[in-house]
Length: 367
Ligand code: SF4
Ligand code: SF4
Image (cartoon, rainbow, N blue to C red; front, side, top):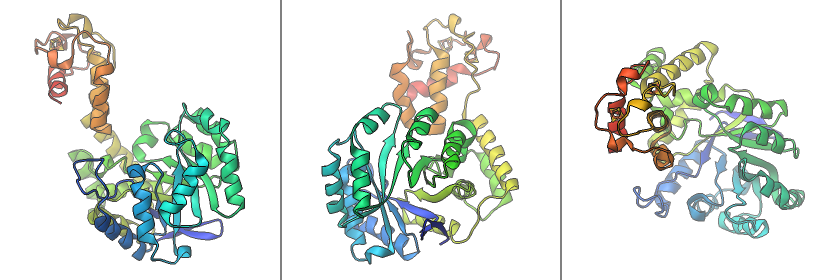
């Protein structure tokens, strides 16, 4: 395991995220955690030198904190670092939450404590409550060692929160896809400009970057046949100088072993490999996404009044982000739904991009 200095301590570059621990019933996200299987993963992480363990008050309705606390109590407390988070939307009683977390984790202090999931619509709630002052008091008493926050906010909100206090660290979603096509690069820069160390979440974008599209995968495999596709994503994040710990929510031993292998030596991407990865990302994007420009030339001819570009936008999000994107189908203002498409082809004659619209409507209609 490779390490990086953080203030006066050494943190493993790979951290264990405890949000996706194995469940008793894998098909039911509400199912309790399978403690023996989860403990096997946590034990393996600890044995192999991972010393940063991340959880949150809300993960698995509290079961994640309990499971982690139960597993770690057998080790000397100064041989690992616990990170957990306070979510004001889940329970605004920060004093009670903090005490409950210490009890669940079977500890008298939290090493890395985070304001959880900063967003544009909750920043005022966090700033107007006295929770930050309270956590600073706990830090002064030694019950919190380092105070930080995790963010899913837009750049302006992030900047405002970052300037609110001299944070010890922050947690951000960083992966090469969002770096290229989202606002991640700007968010990273906001923290880098303030010299705030970054713990990274979703480096493989919830697993979506573990397998791209055939041509993109082939490009990467040709360059480094012994690297998995997921490891490219981790190596990209590792190459960013402001990044401290890279969290991975490992649910299987196979993922654990692959990640351990990746972080067994310093293999941050060099510039040439980075360029290749960006090329693969472009290929992936072009292969899975429909190149609709939202010109709407197709719409007037549709006998079913289907809002084609809006549904194609959801199609693209589905392919890149996963099935949750389909939840937005009901929100589209449209007379007809994709399932109403009669494959008449009237739209296609108007499409400058030659998109086979009925095929995508069918796929969406069947989803
Ligand atoms: S093929 Fe489907 S989407 Fe295209 S015009 Fe006909 S009904 Fe509308
Ligand atoms: S005509 Fe083609 S590019 Fe324009 S909105 Fe319709 S599907 Fe998209």
